[in-house]
Image (cartoon, rainbow, N blue to C red):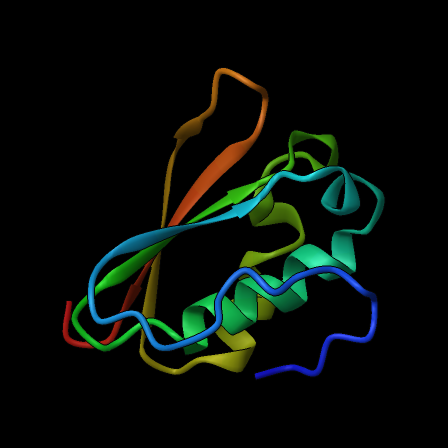
Length: 101
């Protein structure tokens, strides 16, 4: 897991052996797209094979395919990305299927 020196709480604290969602829509995420990328990587790393994590990203940064997907694909070998929808609050949901799914 990436060491967080920003003072922002991590989106995950342990491995998730079920599908789950990571909320990346806080005000700290609106100000820092790199934080979204790093916490998304942490969320994927903590998702067990055969499950998925929904990355709910802040809408201020636009569609996550433009800044997040390449970063995730470069970091992880066995994932599949799927755009789910735009939230009513303006955010975006990317579902990341982790190996075996």
